Image (cartoon, rainbow, N blue to C red):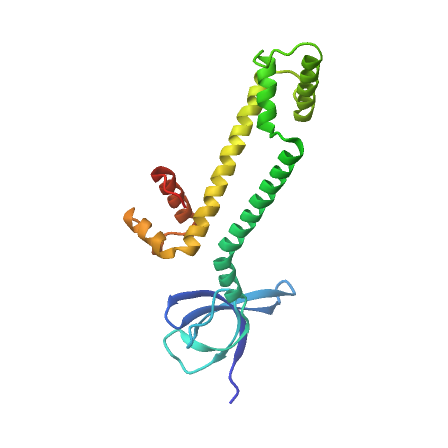
Length: 236
């Protein structure tokens, strides 16, 4: 005797052992509106191997009643998109950390290249402009003074500074803010590497802080460890 077969997507998994919920969609003709409409039915399905994940497309087959509501069993996994998503969620933090490391490396490389070409960083140029404007520059006279003034004017043009005043201090504050953000980003990357490479030490630190490592998500672990290393001053 032929058994009923249906194809649907796993929408729930892991709440009960060897049990999943599968949603099956089908077109049903509605005589009232004279159109086919989408109908959805949810089935409690037996998963003997406990391998199905949310998002998988499976073929289910009618079987003998295993419980009051379980009358289907998984016959085939047609598409394991759910497992691919689980793997992606595990690999995503590592991939993000690697991308951030690469961006930081490229940024530092470009910065070193600029310094090698000009010999001065943006902050160095701002300090020279400030010293010149406040009269703290060397007391050069004649051609030397003109050369220094031309150099300062060139730096102003490069940085888009028309006059030295309150706006210029805002630029300095902006640079300080960017520097702080860069340092925070570097610390985040180091913490992610620490979590990845030393899971035992990570769990030990979290336990010492009265935290349960198993109940904490990755982003929360990162924030806790960033605060821990910042306060203790320990090097990563």
